[in-house]
Each structure stands twice: as structure tokens, then as C-alpha cells.
Length: 412
Image (cartoon, rainbow, N blue to C red; front, side):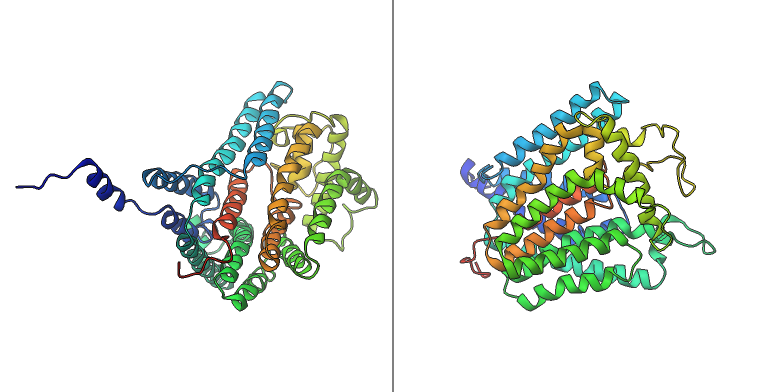
């Protein structure tokens, strides 16, 4: 005869089979650095699925839904979504504007799903997640390095590129910048677990991998992050204030700066890389359009469809702005005006407040993570690229996930 199992015992048996949320997020951390090397837009699906799975396990285990510390982030993020959606009223095309507002909302929802899960992780779960992230990042670095040294045979295979045709180097850009962003939470995990020498080596190893590659945005982001981390370690919290003030000044002075660069012949300077000269041309055009609609902008996703206004596209391109302006902050100002730029800037600066409360070395590494994301956003990626938004979300959540009180031992 089968013994009777009461409801409490049955529930306990069922919940014992539920994986810990930290285990699910550790699985994500192990594959997050590697998969984007070859599936450039995989981060959106990858993070969404693992976030939902982790939340399901969190609820099954009846862990508390704590949203502490996130009020300012969610309110500001909500304002950004609202301004973006309202911009459909005056946008060049309402459909793309509403779609992009939905994508931004999706990234914000993903943060909301992960926030209570990450807050409730135990010390053991955080340690395992950190170890998984380090493993995944090291594996991704090895694969990326060997693949680049052999002229990208994996990209050739996965994209069906014939042997006689050269493999475009830009195919690895999104994967490399993902590794650059995730390098910093991995280094933070190493430091907090007591492997401090390896924590210092991790960013240097990433720089040694990235700098020889033809990935200028990733190289710029990595160098900026290393400098920011070093200055934070040397100067401490005052450097955070300098970083914040510098970003604010740069964002609001950008239209003037790029106009001056263009007027000084920055587009025709042969000694500069063609990619930078092209960016100067794009940014000058964007600055002119910002001056025409500085407060409300042209509407979300206007970058993709804004007319050239008689300007001849340079370097053989079909339009002046190829998909996006290659500068997140200029794009936000172009599309949402000052009413959108201000909350976006607040959203970017909010992590610095939390970073300021950390101990010296974790503060330097977390500050490096922030600097890497901001530096990559300046000359590289667009605000409307979902993979980029979700990569930043992944970086922020992984930094939060590996952090824990310093008095909690690794063995706990």
C-alpha cells in the first residue's frame, strides 16, 4: 500500500526538485559571454528565458519579492518609456516609435523580473554564479582568440561564407563588446572570492585579446574602463563625481564639439581612421537636426528614416545615417529631445550612487563596468538596438548578483 503523503510533505518534496534561482542564473552566466560571439542578437532571448526561469524558481521556493533599492531606477525607466511612446505623436512614423518604446519597456521588465531574484540569492548561489561567469568568460576569450587568429573559421562556417571570400571582421564586434562588458563582473567575482591576483589579471587579459583585433569600439571601451578603474582605486569616491560630471558635460556639449570637429576638417583628415571620419560626418548631421527640434526630437526610431535633407552621404553609403548615429546619447537627443535625454542621463548615472557605497576594490571594478558600457555607447552602438540594451541589463544584473556582504564567507 502506498503511504499517504500530506499536502505539506508533498509540497516539500516538489519544491526540493526545483533548481535554485542562483543555479539557473549561473547557467546563464556560463553561456552569456560565449553565445553572442556567434549569435549576435542572442542576448535578448537568452536573458529573457533565463530571467523567467529564475523568477519561476524563486516563486516556487516562496522567496520574498523584494524590490528594495530600485524605486528610482524603475520610476526613471518608466518616464523614458512614456516619453518614447508619446513621441509617436510627432514622430516621422508612429509605428516604429511605438515598437521601440515597447522594446525599451521589455528591457525594463526584464530588470524588474530579475531584481527580486538577485536580491534574494544566498552567498553560496552568488559564489557559484560568479564561478560560472568566470568559466564562461575565459572559455569565450579562448574561443574568440583562436577563432580570430585562424581568420574567423567559425564565423565562416556559421554564416555560409565561401572559402574564396573574406570574412567581414565586423561579425565578431557584438560578441567582443559583450565579453568586454562582462569582464568586469567576472573580475569582481574573482576579487570577492579571494582570488585577487586573478581579478587584476582579468581586465588586462581582456585588453590583450581585444586591442589587436579590428574592434575599435571594444578597444576604446576596454581602455576607458581600465583607466576609470585604476583612478577609482587611486582616488576613490571623488573620481566617481568627476566621472558623473564629465559625462553630463560631454553629453550636452557633444553637438557643439562635433560641429567644431566637422568645421575643422575632421571629415577630410586622411590621418584619421575612415570609421572615425564617417562618425564625425554623421554626428555633425545629427547635431544640425537636434538644433531644429531640441526639446521633443524627431520621435523614437527616427534615425532609421530621417531624410538626408539634400546632404550627400559619404563613403558610398546610401543614407547619411546608416541605421543609427553610432552614438547612443546623440541618438536619444535626436529622437526624444531634451525631455527624453534628461531621464536617460539620470538612468545612466544612477548606478554610480550604488557604486559609491562599495568598498574600495569592488568600487573600482564596478566603476570599470560602468565606464565600459558608457564608453561603448559613445562611439558605437545605438539606443534602439535590443541586443545592446539587454547586454547592459545583463552586465548590471551580474554585477548585482556577484556582490555580497564582505563578512559572508565563500564556504557559506
